Image (cartoon, rainbow, N blue to C red; front, side, top):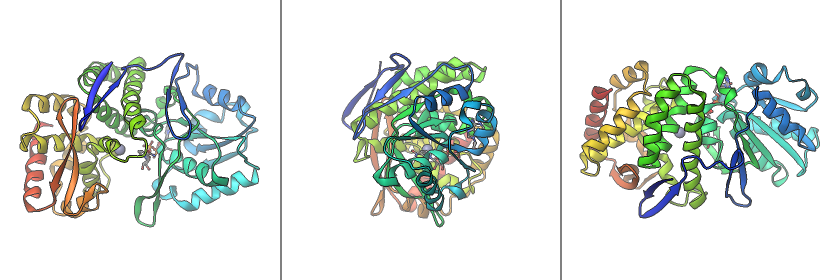
Amino acid sequence: MGSFRIQNQSFSAPLDPRENGGFVTRSVPRPYVVEFPQSTRPSESVAKLIGACRHPLLLVDGRVAQLHLDAEPSLASVPRFTIEANEESKNIQTVLKIIDFLETNRATRTSMLAVVGGGIVQDLGAFAGYLFKRGIPWTFVPTTLLAQGDSGMGGKTALNHKKTKNLLALFSAPRRVIIDTGFLDTLGDNDMLSGMGEVFRLHVTGGVDFLTAFEQEFPRFKEGSKDALLRLIIGALSVKRAVIERDEFEVDLRRSLNYGHSFGHALEALVDFRIPHGIAVTIGMLVENEVALRRGLLSKSERDRMLRAGRALVPAASRNELASVKLDGILELLRRDKKTEGSALKLVVVESIGQIRFIDLELDTPTVGLLHDSVAAVVHAL
Ligand SMILES: NC(=O)c1ccc[n+]([C@@H]2O[C@H](COP(=O)([O-])OP(=O)(O)OC[C@H]3O[C@@H](n4cnc5c(N)ncnc54)[C@H](O)[C@@H]3O)[C@@H](O)[C@H]2O)c1
Ligand SMILES: [Zn+2]
C-alpha cells in the first residue's frame, strides 16, 4: 500500500488493486469496472465485449482496426464507425457524424458503444456518448499506453475547436474500461514513450512506494517484460483512482494530476510539438522540481532521485529540442494555462516525494530567469 499527500489531505492506494482481474472506480452517477483480461489476442477482448452486448456499436481507430480487428470474423457484422486518429479530426464535426451513425443504427440507452483506440478516439466517443439523447452507455478499450495508463479512466473528455486544443470539454465516464496490453505490441516508439511519461508522473505523485516500484519495473519493461508493463499501468491507475475518487470533477485536489503539465504544455508549444506529450510532461516535472528546489521547497537528494528516474525516459532528440528552446514567449503561454488566476500561476510542485503542494508562481520577469536557470539545470543533467 502506497501513501501520499496532496496539500493537507492523505491518500492511500494499493500497488496492485486488482481483485478477480480488475477493480472498481467510484464515479458519479455510477461506479465502473477497469478490467485486465488475459487473452491470447487483443481482438478476443473486443469480441468478448461485443458478444456480451444486446445492441453493440463499434467506434474504432482505423489503424487499430486494420492491425487488430479486421481478422476477427465475429466483429464483421457489427455496425462500425472508423476514425482516422489525428488532432484535426478531434472536433465537434466528427462528433456530429458519430451521432448520425448512432441515429442511423437506432442507438438507445440499451445499446453499447464500444470505443476502441487511443486518447483521440476516446475523446470523440465519450463526447458523442454524452450528447446523444442525453447519454448512452459506452465502454472504452484503450489501445495506446497513454490511454491505458492514464486517460482511459477519469471521465475527462475534450475536443479541439478552431485553433484551440481541448477547448470544448466535459466529463463523460465510461461504463467499463477493458485494458489489453496486447494492443501495445504495435504501438510506435514515440507513443510508447509518451504514455510512459504519464505513467511516471502518476508513480511520482503516488509517493515513495510507487516511485520505488517504478524504479524497479521500468528497467524490466525496457528489457521487454510484459509483466512489468502491466504492473506499471496498474500502479499508475491505482494512484489516479485514489485522487479522482476524492475529487472527480477537479474542484481542487485533482489539479495535482497536472504536475509537469504547466511547463510541459508551454514547452510543447515552443518546440512546435516536436517533443511527444508525455515526454514534455516528464521534462516539465523535472523543470518544475528545479523551481521547487530553488524556492527552498524540495531537497537536493529527492530532486536527484526523480531526475535519475525521469532521465531514462527522455530520448536524445527531445533533450536536444530542450537544449535549443528559446523561452521568449513562455510567460504568454503560461498566462493561458487554465491554472493561472490573475498574475500568478498555481503551480503543482512536489515538496517531498509523497507530498504535493500548489504554489503561486508570479508570471513576471524574475520567473523567466528562474525558468531559464531551471531548464539549463535539466539540460545539463540529461
Ligand atoms: N480525455 C482525457 O482525459 C485525455 C487525457 C490525455 C490526453 N487526451 C488526448 O488524447 C490524445 C492523444 O491520445 P493518445 O496518445 O492515446 O493517442 P492517439 O489517439 O492520438 O493515437 C496516436 C496514434 O497511434 C495510433 N494507434 C493507436 N493505437 C494503436 C496501436 N495499438 N497500434 C498502433 N497504432 C496505434 C493512432 O492511430 C494514432 O496514429 C490527445 O488528443 C489528447 O488531448 C485525453
Ligand atoms: Zn498529459
